[in-house]
Image 1 (cartoon, one colour):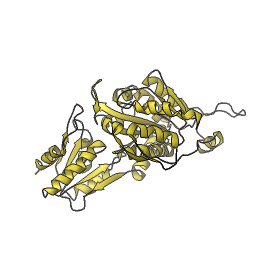
Image 2: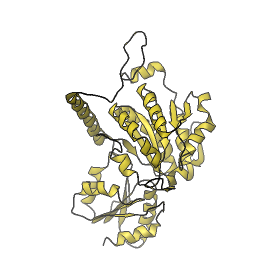
Image 3: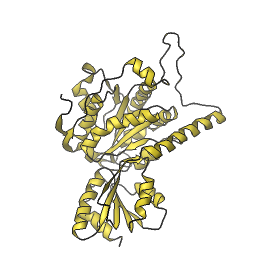
Image 4: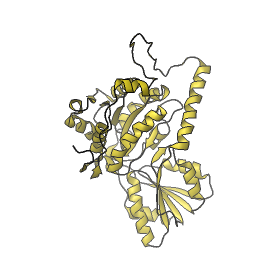
Length: 359
């Protein structure tokens, strides 16, 4: 396969191919619609024969996240993928990894809920991803792709950020992005790191008793309250650094906008068409698309709020990201939500009508 091959594939397939190419050491997962093609594609590609990447279907989502925990503890580039109910089952393990400060990639291709819900696309896991769905004061680094190309691009980026901050990172997509087919340029191959490189780059990783050297202990347990507070404060300091350095977003037709739409993932694609339709009617509106849902582009939202008359949050849910927008704005201009539930993707004209209701 050529390094810069352009091909047509699903978003889920792009995730799998990018994982192989970026030097991923191991994937541990369990099938669930609408992300099962990630595991299926890896199984079909058989990377264990070419790059040495381990691909294993675990017996459950709980087992898979704990396998990721073990691989991450040894400094390996490891990942899993699932969809909303499966990610819920992983929350304890994700919290443990955040507490132990371990890097890993978790892919969530969202479906509608609550409960088993529907296999149709949704964006109702925003709270779960961006607010730390498990227990304790932690965050995931959350990237929200809006194209198949970004599904491929964000795999390597997520690993880079995860290792930079020693923290789990999540690609938060939805069923539409996971299942749609688009042209994608796959990333070039990266060699997997040698054990010597891992030991140099990840001095914190557990190694076992190599050459009599005492192994590092990986744990999220600390029974002494004073020490636990120090650990938590250090983790929060790391999060503040991430908030300062890693915010990513896209702007679309905001220079002369009187109103703004905020949307991520598939909703941003709908929003762009809505904006084109609204401008054809003489309504000056633009888009701010958060690419990092955490860290959230708070400062950019504040800057935007000083320029426009109102912000409409377009989400495939009952209203989740809109809460962070309102916190950033702090009053002064109206911030409203428009969304559809149950896996229904809104028509762009519905968004335009919701925008008109703001004025």
